[in-house]
Amino acid sequence: MKRLLQLLALAVLILLAVLLYHTLTLPQADSRVAELPDLTQAVDEDAMVERLAMALRFPTLPDQPDAFVGFHGFLRDRFPLTHQTLSVKPFGHSLLYHWDSQNDCPPQLLLAHQDVVPVSSPEKWQHPPFAGVVDGDFVWGRGALDDKGSLMAILEATEALLKTGQTPACDVYLAFGHDEEIGGREGAMKMAAWLKQQGLRFALILDEGGMMLPGSTLGLDRPVALMGIAEKGYMTVELQAEAEPGHSSRPPQTTAIGDLAAAINHLQNHPRPASLSGPTRKMLEQVAPHQPFVKRLVLANLWLFEPLIVRQLEGKPETNALLRTTMAPTLLSAGVKENVLPATASATLNFRLAPGETRDSLRAYLEKALPDSISVTSRGAFLSDPSPVTGIPSATFDRLAALARALPEQPVVAPYLLIAGTDARHYQSLSDQVFRFMPVSLGQDDLARFHGHNERLPREQYPHMVRFYAGLMLGR
Image (cartoon, rainbow, N blue to C red; front, side, top):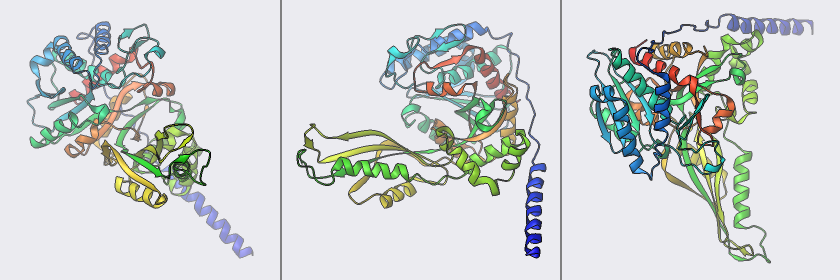
C-alpha cells in the first residue's frame, strides 16, 4: 500500500509539473499596435456620417431594383475621386472596383454587400427603418450594421486617401455584392468566378463577420476583437410525416403531427457532438495569456480540461454554437381544419454545420436517426459546407490584429468561428488568408439588431472604421 501511495503521489507531482510547464511556457500575448492614418485633413466627420445616413435611405431589397440604381448614382456622386480613379465593373447590381497601385505585389480584396433584409414590423422601430436618422449617438437604419456601414466606410477610406494623394501598398479590389442575404449566387459568386478567370490570387480577403464585443464571455476584462477564420456551413431540410386522414373524433394511436413532433424532439434531445474545433480551440488558446492564473492553467492544458470547457460553453446559445452543428426548427405545416386529421405534416429545419461536418454526413445522420416513416428532403437554393479554416498564425493575421489593437477599445484579438454566413465563402479559392471582421464595437444586446429591430451603428465609431480600412489599404 505504501508503494502504491508513493507511485500515486509521484503521478500527481508529474501531472502538476506538466500543467505548470504548459502554463508557464504559453507564448506571450502579441501586443503590437499599428498606426492608423490621420485623415482629419481629408474628412469632415459630420458629412461622412450624413453620407452613411443617406445610403441607408435606399431600400436595397431583392425586389427593389430601382433602389440599387439610385444607390449606384448616389455612390458616383458622393465619391467622385474614387469613380474617376478606380475602374468599376458591374455584375448585375453588384460592383467590382479595382485600384491599381502600380506596385508588383499580391492584391487585397475587401468585401461588403449592398443588399439588406426586409423589415417585418416597422412599427417596432424607434425610427423608420429606411429614414437614415442621425442623432447624437447613433446612425439608425436597416443596413447600418449589415452591411452598408462597412461598404460606406471602405469607400470613405478610399476617397480620403485619394484626396491626400496616398496610394495603396498593393492593388486593392472592392467587391460589393447585391444578393448576399439570399446566397450571393448572382453577385459574389459571379465576381469570384471572374476574378479566378483573371488568374488573380489575393494576399488577403476581408469580409464582414466578427466584431469587437465585451470580453466577459471569454473571461476577459477588456473587449475582444473576434476575427473570423472560418464560417459554418448551411443546410435546410424538410421533414415530412404521412398518415391516413380522418375525423379527429376517432384518432389513431399515432398521427402525422405526432410522428413529426417525435422526430423533432428526438433530434433536439440528441444534438450533434460538441468539440473544440480548430477555430474555437485557437480562440481559447489566443485569449489564454490574458487570463488570471487559474484560467490560464486550464486553457493552457486543453488536452486535459477540454471536457470541462465544453460543458461550460454548452451552457449558452452563443457559445454552444461554436462547438457543434446546430439545428433550429423554423417552419411547421399541417392540417386544414381543427377536426380533420391531416394526411401530411412537415417541418423545416435549418442546420449550421460545424467544421468537420458536411452536408452528406449530416444527411446520413438524419436518415439513420429518424424512422423510415419520416422523409428527409433538402430545401432551398442555398446549401454550403463549412468553409476552409484560414491558417494562423500568419503575417496577414498579425497585421489585421495590430490594426484592431489601434482602435480606441484596444481589444484583445482572437480568431473564431463565424456561426453565420457571408459572401466570403464564394472567394475561398482565391486566397488562403480569408478573414471576417468589422472594426466596430458592440454590446451583447446589439447582436439582436442584425436582421432585427432598431439596427444602428454607434456614430463615434464610424470614423475609426474608416481609419481601419485606410490603414489596411496602405499596408500598415
